[in-house]
Amino acid sequence: MNIMMLLEMTSATFPDRTAFTDGSSGRSYTYSQLFEAAATRAGSMAASGARRVGMLDVSSLATPLTLFASAWAGVPYAPLNYRLTDPEIEALLERIKPAYLVTSDEREPAMSVHKDVITSATTHFLTDAQHSARITGEWSMDPEEIAVLLFTSGTTGAPKAAVLRHKHLVSYILSSVEFASADEAEAALVCVPPYHIAGIAAILSSVYSGRHVVQLPNFTAETWIDLARKHEITTAFVVPTMLARVVDALEGQKTAGMPHLASLSYGGGKMPLSIIERAMRLFPDTDFTNAYGLTETSSTIAVLGPDDHRAAAGSDSDSIRQRLVSVGKALPGVEIEIRDDEGMLVAAGERGEIYVRGEQVSGEYEGRGSVTNSEGWFPTRDAGRMDEEGYLFLEGRADDVIVRGGENISPGEIEDVLLDHAAVRDAAVVGIPDEQWGEGIAAAVVFKPGQSAPIEELQTWIKDRMRSSRVPQVIRICDELPYNETGKLLRRVVKQTF
Image (cartoon, rainbow, N blue to C red; front, side, top):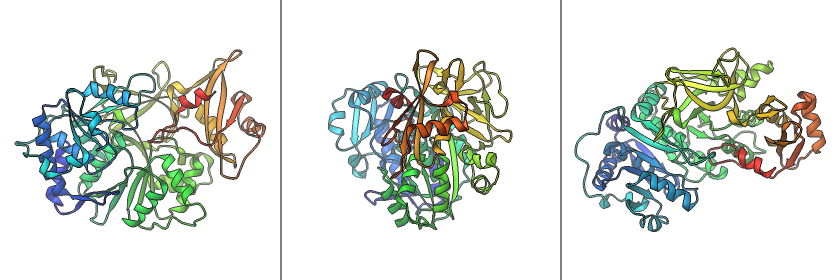
């Protein structure tokens, strides 16, 4: 197994089909061009003697090229977050040295001074004449070789490097994508960054299906809408905050005017019910899919599919309608369980930590080994619950729970109630120190444009729908909440404001 075989198969089947188009420059690669370009870049990587191949730039044609070339050269691919500070980037560079680093033209001079780092500016890397020799020989088919190292966000300390071996990534693709299933007219709009597992999964799944990918390096709702219409995009992936901005940008329109958009997948964070309902009205001909996964699981492990969306949206039952904010059921070949603090299974509907098991699950970190147990179960540190029919609901991180007077309180359940208020656009609930109860409850609220409500009204709104112990003692009104670029709420930043 090697992810290069995915590109080889598609290149042999659709050599002249467009593979990737840079949405900024308009430059494209066909599948055969991408394959041949990977061979010469792999030659440069192998000749460099690098231990890792780094990527430090926004999405461009260099992104899939670097991923596949590194696989051919047998050197793990380690994309870095270009939004980090210089000291943070330098710390990660130290961990991947000696490295072959593809980086932006602007950053290349500063990166080139680092010892044991061979740099190639993106423009240089994309120039065929700059690579003197095609790699000789075939790529390794050892499934245990490392394909990708992805650094976690490091919210609780130094970032961990999640290890994804070729067997994990290939297993995920083979179990979730049908080979050569895309029609030549199909096009995917990808706007997630290169250093996120969703970005890597989008490359691999699109290549294996033979789909044309249009890359959006820097997301804005207006640019996303323009590219989707210009290229008649048929499928796209966004995070919840992106979808919310697209919906806001289409405010006042009856439909999005994109009958060609056959499917829209989203994931990476919790989806507010009001947003997905508005989106389904704006895109009436579009199949919606919610995909939940983690870096350590090679991307998606659970899916709420189009039929689930329609059934939930059209139901008169509150419990079924609430499935619109679930992440669906486990993929074939993936097992999911909810366990308590003692590692024991909890009953349907009860909150606990999400555990997952399957061939695509790595659960391994460089220098730390695997954190899966003897039976192959990986503790995700995500909190959630599962209903009687196996629909999974996310409730933040396991360590986000608020312990008030010995009672465990999920921030997510309070946020859901706040989001049901007509004036509330977004909400985040956190625990704060409380002398009497140990922890108290605080909420940050963002109102919809042109709307507002007294804090006392919001507190009464929660009290009338939940127990009084769930009412935030402090509510602050904000212009916006802090999210990272992949749509995850930065709860620690919210907590610091209190």
